[in-house]
Image (cartoon, rainbow over all chains, first blue to last red; front, side, top):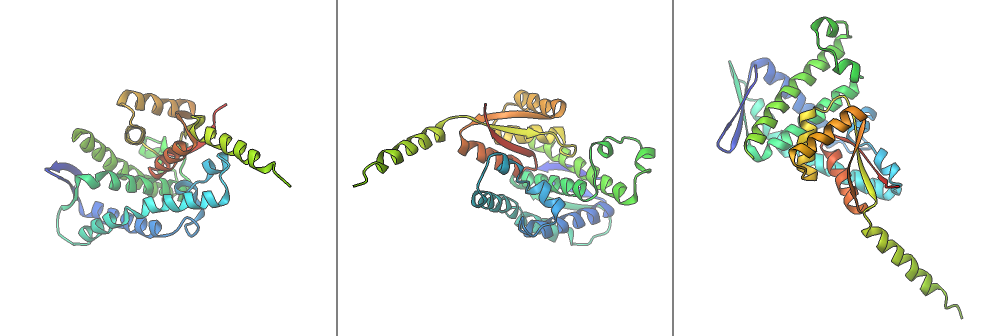
Length: 172
Length: 98
């Protein structure tokens, strides 16, 4: 099971082999989607990452909305370099537990990227309040396999985010 | 000779300047089933510089009432908060205060 700890200016995660593989896949997916512009990304992803509901409510012009979206995409592109570095570490195959180290100052960006993936999974697999509220294995096992797998990833990422939040709040 | 256009432009400009400095835009955060409560508190503290108690109060308002007005600001600042909060994955809108 994943362990996170702080060592000086680094956050160190220790993952099992399976957790490493899952995280590697997640980061690959994030990189792929972050590089797509709001117009290129699929509809469900755009709805959660680049929703323009607020722009419409604020009656922004189409030019203002386009500029606003470009800036928001820029925020996500700003996390690409960090994710590439994580991916390079994750790609190093090793037997037994695997360690991923990131500078503390990058922990927030990683946490936000992982949260983005939770939003993406929920959107792609039609996971809403009822599914997120399921607490028993029996109830989750009644869902279609793709939703079960997505929920597992969502929970795995929630665990990492919670650990990061504790480490970040402990360092303030 | 037409001479009446200048005063009209001045009027419009004055109104625009006044609007730009008026804090009459609400930043609304909407409930969603995916973002963690602890994460939302962190984002409020980070983006809006809320102390933990205030961030928790607004997070609970979002959770129980479906939305919370987290700031009333000038249009420019409201747009900035909107973008920053949405960059963290929260569901946000801005609207002119009544």
